[in-house]
Image 1 (spheres, rainbow, N blue to C red):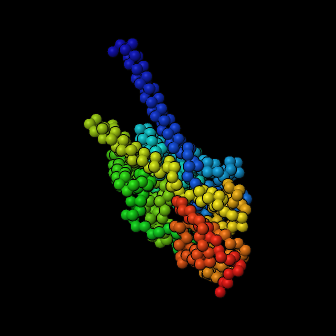
Image 2: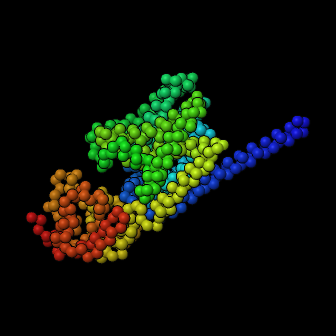
Image 3: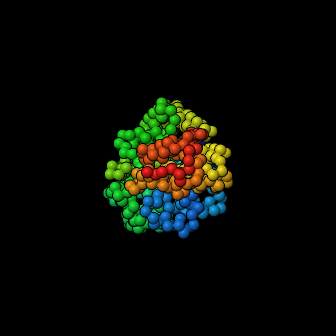
Length: 518
């Protein structure tokens, strides 16, 4: 080969490399745009449900009260609370405003999973992983909710990426980044300690036992020591919960049931049973094969162990904690989703690269997209109510209520739904709202006390609106004493049932003040 030919060949290789990079980043840009479109649009299509409303109302408190959530027992997301409190003072409390931070965090998560995937498994795996997270119905769902879960995913990814860089480079800035991002993660949700547990299992095995990272033990142990102090206030509360000193509403779940729940959630979130089962099996098989594929690369770093640990420990750890006192809720382990999807992506990437079975890789990718499409279309972007429809319920009350009517909200803790919608719908502010006390949480509260409460708060009224959550009222009023009393002393004149909410107007035969409590 002549010098001219050699130069020409080198130029052609450089051109192909540039083209490949442009194509790669073009695909990444398309994935990010698609992920942004799924998260940043239709934010107000669904009503805020109770959990969202409650956190928004609490975010409107004076900032000094919100700041106290950092040391208050039982606060699950103090960092999110303060950020939302600052945000609503700038952007307001509309559905779009309060959900926008989560939507943006969801888009950032798509970028971060690409960076992590590229770092531990290669650019192709990172790209496919980003695509899977971009169209994940589960991640899209929580990216459009005014809660901390999209932020949790971002911080979990940032923490893990910082750990990977710290181990690779052993530079102080990356150890500091790891400590800072993990501390922020702790204060975003109490269950995020399971991410730290997964990271620590990997680090202990590779750094301490296998000595795969010479000179890193000191940096890792210092980071662990630094992270201990910020977690102490959260740990004290967590120990009270685990010890059974604090009541929880979560049901007990067996290990197999827990694994099935997460297999479905991480695949399609929710859809018809057949699709759920098939998608769950496909994702689980691909994830399992992904761990094997990465393990066979025989990388000294054993990044496959990190991804496997991050996929398994949050799920199994949540179940183990729940053996003593159930705190099981699938969204608490959403931090396992990115690593799980990267394992799935590893299998797809490996199949596509194989000479004879690459069509299997394309078929797997096609099925993954197909399974995601149905839930995205029919659940995430549905025009029918998929969340509790408090917006329609209170709009109907505002349209039909009469002067002097009284609203009774049960269970009483749902009164924040009125507090929120009274700000959004000015007509509601003229009506008095009563938060019904709990017959189970308050041992001294009985039917006589209930009537006395109605007499004190609305003694002269005859029009009563019973606003209730059918799924929750049984836990606070198992005998349905309030509804029974209203049926006895009045007649239902109007009723509306929407997703998760029931509203009934009663016209009493006499005001509560004239009804004998004996």
